Image (tube, rainbow, N blue to C red; front, side, top):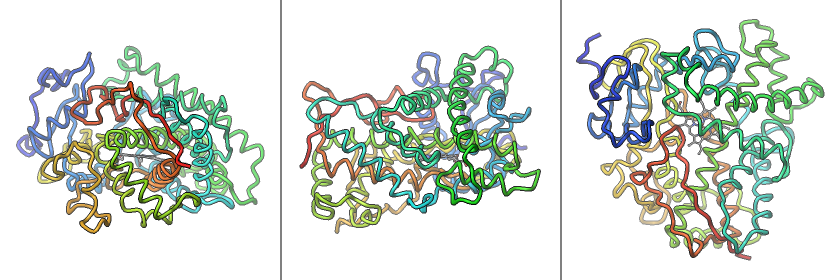
Length: 488
Ligand code: HEM
């Protein structure tokens, strides 16, 4: 391996890696501000750089064409071995994981293929995916009608409804919005996700130290286990009434059928292995699919409060195309270019998963002319190209107009620098579902309500440069309240 072929980056020393060389402004109370650090690397060292997060060499790719090139390669499709986290995910001693988000190799291939197929549009039993989501949209709209005229935090409400929609799809059970179990799930998921920091990657090299000395390990273990006991209960309930001859009504039933029909002992669906993987897949789908989607909605409302003219134009479009009486449906989306531009623009400025999920080089390989050595983590720096002034004029400004042509038709700009769901073989497994939920909830709410900024509230900033709070994997919207006005 020639050092000159390796991507450029800051200096490093043993153990601490590049951390002593990282400018102080990227360290917040003992924590690295990873998204901002990566943005600085992109500006200083170009589209591919290398930084040592502790002793772990980490390649940061800040151009989405190069991300695509990299993540198409089998050599960069695995996840880093996540010891000691395998201990509570039925993993293997070498850090191998079950499920989809953190798994690699055969387990990942089989579980991802199956989950993607089940989350396709057709839904389960007699309900399409759209029907299942619409019921939750209407439930939320009805409950919001009771809360007009007073300051309201939408964050929790969105979260509850999105998790409930997932619960119907995966577990086949509709919960009331104030069901204690639902609140429990939402709180546990929130803890699990907020606890996920890029510094968790350090465990790759110091699994034992991490396990005994890092407070996050115990936190992750406890929250994961309380989530798992909810899943185990749901799986048990399904197994008791399971009838392999009946058409499946939800994801768990489909999965149990897959286990039933698997005779290859090497398969990750085989008997007991299948049940363990199911446990992890369910948690992964809840982790990947709940807050990401609800936060995107919360960012949207924040941007609309900053830009009331944009909200007015959405209302005009909805009024003229859908009207007050019919529910906005998936088939209407192509006729709503302005709303589509608003959604695309929100996904860009918010970039809720700003640096993707780490990949890992299993066999040294080249990308963009650089050598990516075996054993490096690879991160897609999604937010930097989204906010690159060479690609998007005045990039931090929320401006849906940039996704509309002069005739008001929706258009993507002439560049490939847009990928909120990442790219390549591991792109977001729930992208279609996320886009459908995002649209149905947003259109459903804005058809019925106008949102206002409470008079006494100074609106928090939505711009990345002002964001010091989000140092981790997910970019949460700052806290704010809205006042809803019914449009009926
Ligand atoms: C706005 C909403 C969402 C955004 C922005 C988002 C973004 C992402 C990103 C950037 C990745 C990393 C891909 C990579 O490793 O290269 C990812 C992975 C993943 N997402 Fe999403 N996601 C969203 C919603 C969802 C939903 C609704 C689900 C499922 C119900 C989901 C499930 C997953 C899973 C399982 C993975 C891991 C895929 C794998 O490792 O093969 N996500 N997502």
